[in-house]
Length: 156
Image 1 (cartoon, one colour):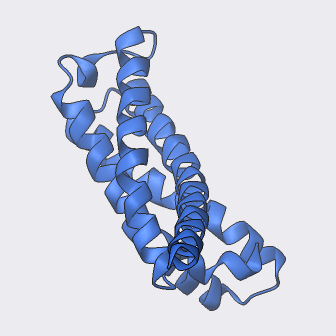
Image 2 (cartoon, one colour):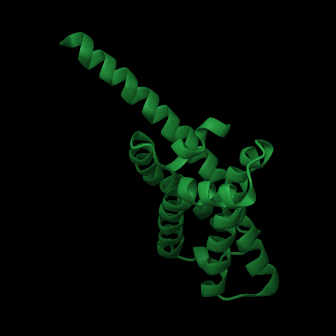
């Protein structure tokens, strides 16, 4: 019995490590999109709503884009790449963006902080940290069921 429990624990550890790796990948795309969205919003003087919308949109674009790179290198057709990227990242990115945006909105002054303000960068880093740890169990659950990043893992 102990052997089975130990073996299950090892598999769970591998699944968690894979989920963390997938979430770090997702975080990279989200962070690029978030920062670019905030920079554009600040540069063009957009309000909070447009700033959040741009950041979320760009987080999805960069998240899907990073997932697509190995699929393009593997020579898959565009239709297949789009389907795999959507299946791999949509739920994870949505989770991260929801938590990230909510965190930024509840930090007093974060939405009004400029790019040269420590509050802007500190709240962004804190929000991404919270969003990352919220998305790890989501990715773990998806990968454990053969979904999420499990669908593109063979192409990496």
